[in-house]
Amino acid sequence: MASLDMDGPFALDGKVIQNTVGDSPGNFALGTMSENKRFAVRIVGRSDGSLQQTLLKELKRGTGQPGFFARVFGGKKRINAFKFSLARDAEAAYSKECRNFHNFGGASKLANKEHPKPPPGVTTPCEHCKTKGG
Image (cartoon, rainbow, N blue to C red):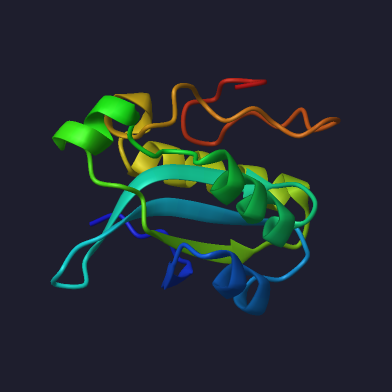
């Protein structure tokens, strides 16, 4: 069974993010928390700078939230939780994002539309699919 190797899940809330997440590079997963406390991954991502600021921007943008008709008539569950881990640098965060992307089904299973792109200056190919530059 795939593992994110992250802390959480936590409620997807601005105050929770500010009080819990550090201000360094890192990785995150956005998803839904079921009534029986199971976290279902919908999106994986990373921050090359401030993970806290990246998560706050994702929250503000409404990333992964259902559109108007789905909210009114039912449909996809709203993303309501996140997990995270800090990384030593942007390259380590990229490597973990690739691993999580592949382990959780890639673009066919996640809401991520494409393979992660490497941070500027990183030429190391994805260790899972060997693509360079995503």
